Image (cartoon, rainbow, N blue to C red):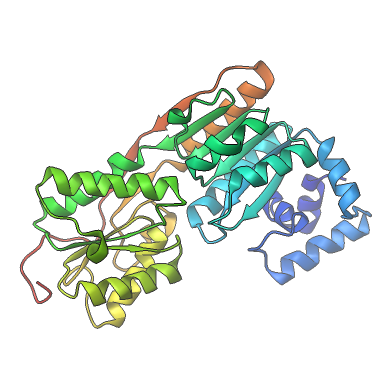
Length: 340
């Protein structure tokens, strides 16, 4: 009995089964009950010793995911799990808090579970400088670049976050907006947030526009609820803003709801641009203008590079996947309207 067999009999995906077996969040009670019924039927017992032994002998690849509300990561995880299984490897999935030290967790997983490789979703570069040397297997940062770290067993597949964020802000500037707010991640713990923040700064600098973080920037985790609250705070500090760049689509969704709850319109009063290109952005009202990351390419290359390093002992590789600007209905030219 394998994870695939449990998935087939229960009617759920391999990813859902894996989340249940790893006690991860994001699974409904009904799914958990049905999957565990199959597990019990075939005596697929989950005591810690048996689970550890199975994982040690299972030709496994570990995925470490920072945060549980990042919808981009949820999409990537499902695709990564499917490819890992298709390649004949077992998948070990671990969710940690967004502000946790992922390398510290990885060292523990490496020592206790003995995976053949590790994929990281979400990263803080300072942790790799301090502790990564203890890990002696191939690893890949997914969506973040590790090129500057120059670690022999750490590859990366990423979007150029800095350039993409700069493009987003410059698009708003090109439409005549000058009172621009930014909703972003915690730059001290998220390399993606730091890179996108730096891109925003460069856009303002190159257009000789002031950027005052204390007034124009609000930090939050990548979630709708945090995006909503961050937008509320931003409106209190900048009641005259005309547009917002949100560093993730889920933040943008929360921001639009907060704007509407204040009696303002998107884009007539405040334009909103997101980042990630999630499927939901195409079905929002208004349809979200966003920066799309090519998820399928990121997943495909991450797995190919990791398996090449595992099976063929190749050197670390750092690839940058192009981004795409996707115009929607949430941004319009500044016209000096009621919120100016």
